[in-house]
Length: 131
Image (cartoon, rainbow, N blue to C red; front, top):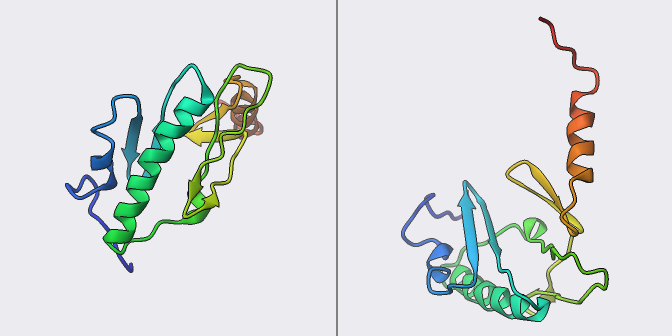
């Protein structure tokens, strides 16, 4: 372990989120997620980018690091026309995914359940229930 912050520590990056009423977050073990809901994707993007800038500044200030391979963005919308909401870290775009798994639930961009149900079905294939 090079660096770490104890789970639930008072010096965690979540302290930057408590001041923003339109951005929500969750911290579970070593996974951290932030989200915002807005009528316009550009509004949510500005909110989240502001928080991300604060969090990554805090990470640098405390000489910590994160796994860049686990930093991804997913935009959820029922709109058919896709909007660019690219987030950045150090002027580098954050990779986007059309689906993400959050607490074991696979969430798709259009908030459908097909992919999650398919994954659950694949896990259960070959398993039998003995009564």
